[in-house]
Image (cartoon, rainbow, N blue to C red; front, side, top):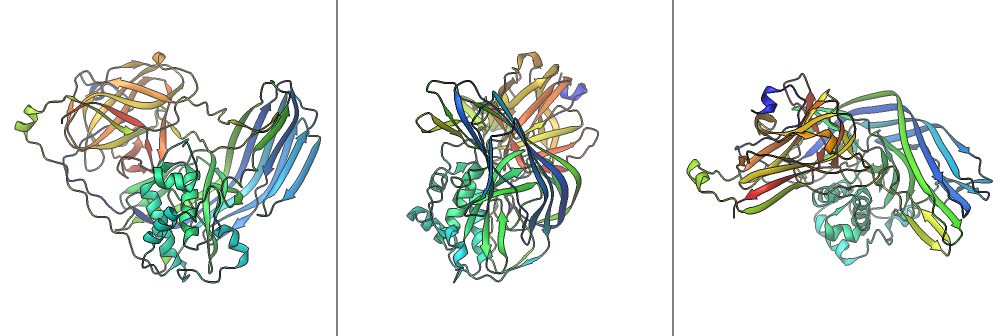
Length: 566
C-alpha cells in the first residue's frame, strides 16, 4: 500500500517528466517597492574562563545610507553591557565606519552585550537610467582604493584580468559590463559553506564558495576592468518576500545572519549595491548594511573579540544571536522573466542602458527509452546525485574559530556561516524539491539534510511524477523512520530513507517529498541558488491547496542513491 495515497499526511514530493527539458534565461526584471520599519537586535554572550586577563570587543555602528535603489535610515542605536567595560571609545576609520571599542581589564566570567537599532529600510525598483560609458575615464581620487588589488581581491592576477576582459569584449556601457560579469559569476560559482578559502582566485579556479567568495571574485573582475567596487558586510533577515509573476509567486528567503555583498560606483548613479549571488543594481530591504572596505580582511571590526590569557588557559566561547522585529512591512513587487540569461536566477530593476542580452540555447530533450529497451537494462553501476554540500554537524550556536595573533594573544572574527533551513513539519505549508535524471536509475534511498529539534512521530519520503513542472502523482514511498532514531545532537546530517520496491526511474524531471505523522519538529537545510537542480525546482503550497504555484529561490540539500546503467 502506498501510504502517500491512503494516509493523511503532509508531504514533500519527487516527480518525473518525459517531456523535453528546456533551458530558459533566468533574468527577472522586478518593478515595485519594499519598505520596512524594524527593530534590529544583536546579542552576544562571551564566557571567559579563569586565566583571561584582558578582553576586547569591537562593533561597527550601522549608519544611514542611500542609493538609487536601496537605502536604510538608522533612527537610533544603543548598546547595553553587563557588566560595563572599563573602557569605551568610538572611532571613525578611513572608510568612514564608526567603530565602538570596548575593553575589560577586570575580566568577568561572563559578558552580555546587546545592540538594538531602530531602522527603516527600503528598496525602490523603478526604471533606472544610466549612460555611464565603458571603460570608465577620469574616476575621482576618492574611489581609487576600490580599484586596487588586495590579498583577497587579486584584480591584477593575469587569470582574473583575462577572464574580465573576455567577458566584456565589445561592451560600451558600464551597466553592460557589470551585468555580464555578475551573470557569469551567478552561473559559474556554486554556493558552498564553509569553503577552504575565500579569495577571488580560489573562487575562480574552484567554482565554489560562500558569500565572501562571490563578493571577492565579482569585485576582482570589476576592478580588473576599471570599475570601482567595494565590499559590504552586514546581516540578512530571514523574513520571506514574495514576487508576483506570470506563473504564480517567487519567494525569496535568506538565512538570518551575517552576509557579504558589493557596491559598484557609477559616475551618474554613485555607489549602487549588488548581491553577487542573485541581484544587479539593488539588494532587498531584508539587508542591513553595517561595514564597508576593500575586502573581507579589512571589514573585520564588527563583532571582533580579542583577549590576553595566561599560557595554557582555556579559551573564551561566544554565542551570537541576530533578531529582527518587523513593526511594518510592505512588499509590492512584480516580476517578469526575460528571454535572456543567465541560466540561474538574476534579479534586476528596469534599466535604460545599452546592453547585449545573454542568449541561453535550449537543452536537448532527455533520451526516450522504449518499453522493450527498459526490459534489457542492467542496473549494475553505483549512482549518487544531488545537492550534496552543506555544513554537516556544525553547531550554529558556536560557529566561530579562534586564531592566535601573538604569544598568549588571541582573537575571534565574525564568520558568515548561516543556518539556512526550513521548518518543514509545521503542518501549514508543503514543500517539494525537484531534480533531473539524465539516465535510468533504480532508486534505493533518498537522503535529506535534516535536524531534529524535538517532537514525536514518523517520517518517510514520497516520490512523485511531474505534471507540467509541478509535483504530480505519487510513484513510490520509502520505509517509515521513527523520529526517535534521529539524533538531537546539534547540527544537520544525512538521514536516508530506503525504498524497498526499488522503483526504476527513467530520464526526466523528478520531485522528492517528506511525509510525516505525529508532531515532529524537523528542519531541512537548503543552499542559496540552485547548485544542481532546475530554477523552478523548489515549490510550496498550503496543505489545503491543489496548485503548487509557489516557487522558492533556493534548493534543499538531498541525495539520490541507487544503481544505474553503463
